[in-house]
Image (cartoon, rainbow, N blue to C red; front, top):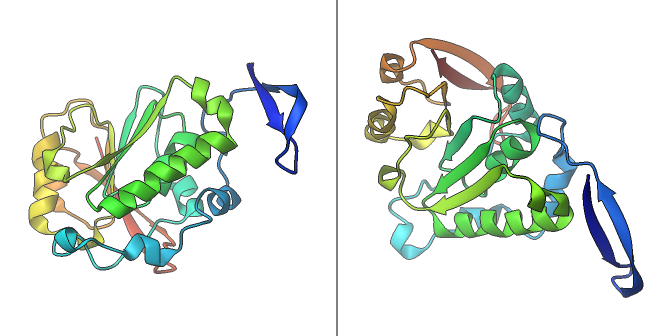
Length: 227
């Protein structure tokens, strides 16, 4: 049981006597983050905020932006065997929703996002602060959620056990960069990619394809490579 205190009333006025609150901290997998929660966490952002690019990044960032829907993430989680020893990466994590949902709705021990575009990364960091305000008990969770700003090619993925890529705009060269980073990773369990890439079979030979709705289409293939 986690103890926190309510300091403000419903009108945002300071309480004379703080109210003790008890939170039962649940491990992931209990649908702790619902679709309506995203509306609260990302309420001040619209798609134009996420689309925007700085001049320096313009030639390196895809001009389109789409997201896997929360319901599709939950269906994906149900396809995977996840425990608290797992380390999840979203390569090209955008505004950070998938990383957040994987952390909240599964038993994953660490959930990490890597995003090149600075504005999208900043949105994910601000959203994480909002999440902690909505769910203060998470501050006592020993699991980890984190976002990183940079080029995928510059990151070490040796600790990854699950990798996700919304890879519709990834070049074959970038897909092979990812492959090169994980080819000697003995703990890797899944590579999940929207774009099929046969070279991944050299590391994870089995492939299962499920179809789920995305923000841009009602039916999109998700390729799950596994041992």
